[in-house]
Length: 264
Length: 329
Ligand SMILES: Cc1cc2nc3c(=O)[nH]c(=O)nc-3n(C[C@H](O)[C@H](O)[C@H](O)COP(=O)(O)OP(=O)(O)OC[C@H]3O[C@@H](n4cnc5c(N)ncnc54)[C@H](O)[C@@H]3O)c2cc1C
Ligand SMILES: Nc1ncnc2c1ncn2[C@@H]1O[C@H](COP(=O)(O)O)[C@@H](O)[C@H]1O
Image (cartoon, rainbow over all chains, first blue to last red; front, side, top):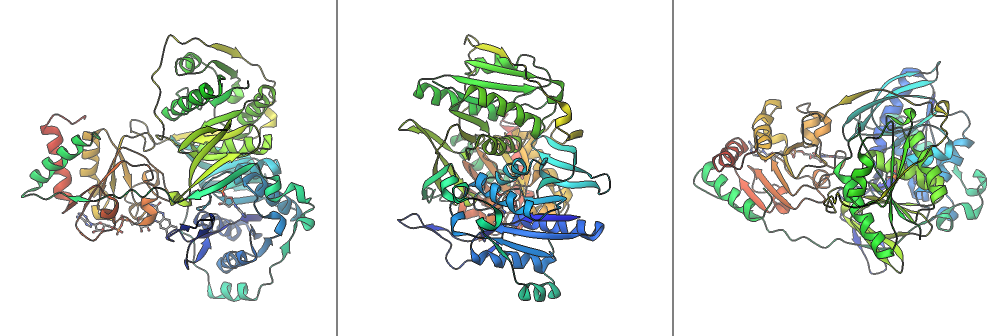
């Protein structure tokens, strides 16, 4: 099986973010990481490779420095990595990102599965997976909590999707696009993996390599606009500590407060 | 002028509250723009949902019934929605920000060559354009966004807007639309449903949530929390630490890799308040923290704090609610 995992490099989720007057977002010296949801997709893909054979290719659309995220994935055990980078890609929204990823996946040839994260922890949109499924014309299985079975010969997959009311069990033909919920414990990079990643020359594909015209990519092609980013109004909560002689008294005082707040 | 559309998401014929909250937003936008609201109902068979939608604010309800549409599946639902949108040229399509809603929105944006604004917390009209404020970076920042093309696709965050009161006297038009659907064109198949929320209050819709963390000590430690939740008519929530420990299933997990919740009241019991847990509490009005450690970070975001053993405080709280006749169950 050939599995492709599109990953995104994001700021660490514990980073403190600031926005300056010109709207530039900064995360200080907090490290950049592989989007945590994508780690679930990487781990699950590596398990499928271990079971069925084949290879796992990671791709990312991002700046030159996003190679670090690809190396992290290779160190975990992914076989190949490709960076999609071109100044023309800058400002691509979710749909255009999907267009670029789709072109790269087609260029890779025979692919059985695309495994993504549920959403990115910076954009928080969960829009690239459905858009990519449409651009490829493959079935979408989003919010996967478990892979029940894969039949590589019959070319079908059965998964459990986690929705609000419970789990929807769905069968789809391969190739398909999946997005991962928290479905495993992602492994740490191995020593061998880190050595392999350090030596790896990561190919960079540009718009021309993907057969995409400048007007098909980047800000020009994107319909979403977000001119203003700002820090949310600080909700200064002063914690009032409830004290009392006994649990009963504390409970009584607390219920009084909650009634006054009209939240009971 | 072209209408503002709302997708009537349903599960087994029942329309969740988030759809009506979305309808309220659509109604307000349509009134400002001087246009109407079209609701779209897609499913196996319709009962009285169209009348319900009119009472909640729709002017037109487009109804598409087909056996192939009984269960939500991305591809056929998207095909129907795309077909309708191409014929009807909506100016915006509003969708509840649920799992299905977000998939459908992403597919529509791709098919219609436009964009989605996800998880709207505020929606307004500026210069005739729909402008949305949405959280990014797990709610650490907000973005003011709009869509350059038409239709704008907007998903509405649950419990961020009020649910309108139904007006049974409202008049509207129900239009049945028949669409040729080749079932073979949609090869995904729903094999079964494992319903996990039966008889439980869902975390997404709950007004009150009782959350438990590692401080509960083990699977049986959730019992006093369940008692309290029953008394409050609340949903139960949990941290990843206890889910990973296998004390409670994943569906209860709140936080960055779990659910995002916005109840009026969140009672955090034995929870330290890690940033990844807090990012799931974006819209909570009042947080109460019960923790033995006065230095626990949860107290930095809590409105009320109790520094004590949760096994003393939680049962006392349940008893106090019962004593005052405030307990529901
Ligand atoms: C990528 C990533 C994603 C994550 N996603 C999530 C997520 O979605 N949700 C989530 O919750 N976490 C998530 N985490 C984990 C998060 O970082 C914390 O590890 C986790 O939230 C801690 O859970 P806890 O508060 O239950 O445990 P702890 O941090 O161990 O806290 C237990 C608390 O209980 C108190 N306590 C102990 N006994 C008692 C008692 N008898 N009475 C009162 N108080 C008591 C202690 O003082 C302590 O403060 C994620 C982490 C990463 C790296
Ligand atoms: N720039 C990107 N490069 C590669 N994959 C991406 C990129 N952006 C998003 N993705 C994938 O799409 C998923 C959902 O991201 P999003 O739609 O941005 O919330 C992520 O978990 C990744 O798998």
